[in-house]
Structure formats: structure tokens, C-alpha cells
Length: 60
Image (cartoon, rainbow, N blue to C red; front, side, top):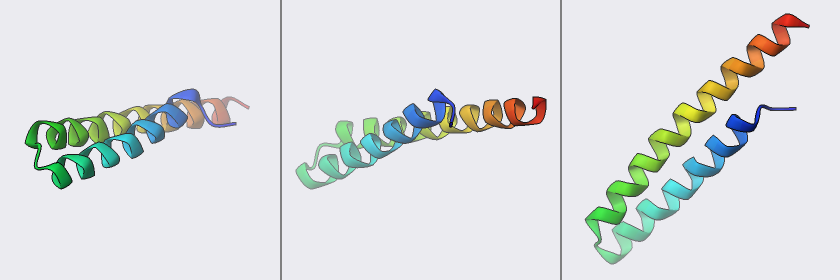
């Protein structure tokens, strides 16, 4: 089972893409920037989860 960080990171990344798209659609540059920031945060969290998965797999 994937680490919880991977699941949450993926969800945050998708949410960020939606937020960025909504910002573009409405011309809201702040919302667009928040979406991009959420995507970066989600990618980092997903990567941390991947490292945790690798460490757990290597222990077994």
C-alpha cells in the first residue's frame, strides 16, 4: 500500500492544477499562483512518500 504522503501529495497536485486552471479562466493571478504552489507542494509530498515506500520495501 502506498504511503499516505503519496496519496495526499497526488491529491494536492491535482487540486493545484484545478485551482490554477480556475485562476486562468477567471483571470485571477493570485488563484493561479496558489494553484502552482499547491502543485509544487504536492509533488514534494509525493516524492517524500516515494522515499518512504522505498525504505519500507528495502527493509522487507
